[in-house]
Length: 309
Image 1 (tube, rainbow, N blue to C red):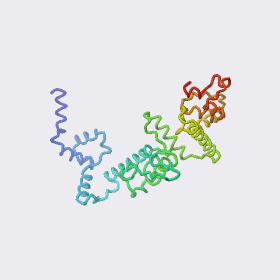
Image 2: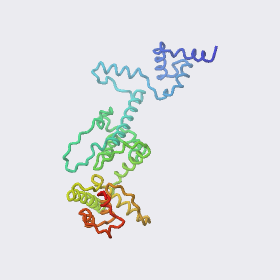
Image 3: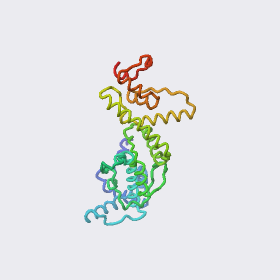
Image 4: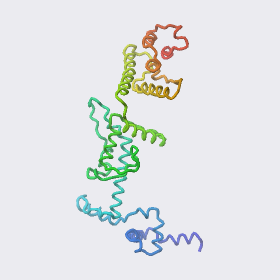
């Protein structure tokens, strides 16, 4: 007999017509490996999921009973049973998905409206029943999966949910799911989670940041109102660039950096000139008015460049 024929002969018991009988043997093996013949036991042990598989008969019986009972579970899973362990594993998987979805969609319900004018509806994917968990699971402990530097600690679902809302649904929202490189995305996620929890900026720094943001927005609003239609490459919507650049320069100075060269984009250039590099607003407005001091502007002329000269 050829090698290929031997292989076909050896696999003949696995043909579709024998499926019910083989499934019955597998059920017996899962409940008690010693209850099946040695040859079948050796075969079932080669299956990749044999160690984690559960007997389906218990689940089918429970689903059948639930169907007869109007969808309500007729029995409870026995503690320590394979079905019980499977249910626990499903709950853990659901909590893991909950953590992932909050990192992706939590910004949609972040508390970023200080006046409370917008009623932000909670997306269905952020509701517990979407994941198959409920209030009844709130005091059950689950692995956190490294959330916010917790490693593989176990926390109650109540505490995990509170931590997720603190990080992703607070006064700052973050969206980085669009980043295709997993390493970059996870780097941002890790630092965002820990940064929110370790936010210890003193009040004077907070006031300084607010002052810089106000200056950045103020000059853009003035230019837009005073010089309507003139090209200026506004920084509106990106005002956080100003306090960020300021902090970067200050931090760099403390480490010994003596010179910064900024490869500046068009957008926000005027704002950076005034609020970071110290260009006089008076000079800026004169240039917008067309009142140029050619000697003073020699080799410069940012506003002229933006106006198309």
